[in-house]
Amino acid sequence: HPSGTMGEDPQGIPNNLMPFIAQVAVGRREKLSVFGNDYPTPDGTGVRDYIHVMDLADGHIAALKSVGAKSGLHIYNLGTGKGSSVLEMVEAFGVACGNPVSYELCQRRPGDIAECWASTEKAERDLG
Image (cartoon, rainbow, N blue to C red):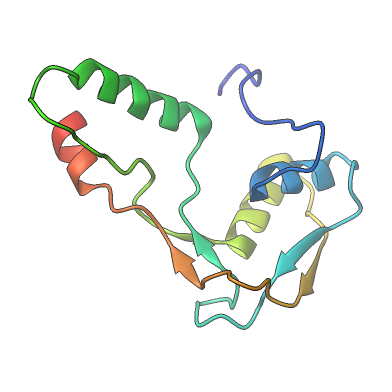
């Protein structure tokens, strides 16, 4: 968010990538653990659909505004519709804040998949 007042700053253990990266960037953590660097992806790290909280909120608002326009149940995937790797996100954050983010490559976690991102065509078509 342009004001810098919207985002995530968990006080406990974060449950997604961006707060971990941010905590390393501000010195709350020494380095980021990157789980898996041997996936069949361009840089070997997991690929996910990272959406900004404000874009997600806009999607929710658009969905709420569409209630009643069509009858029945409508399910939408909200996301960017494209994947970015963990290392791409680490690099982008470092560039944005002007400091590289320290990380270490670790073994994969059980159950993690190589790639996953949202199919957003229906949301784009119906919600704009």
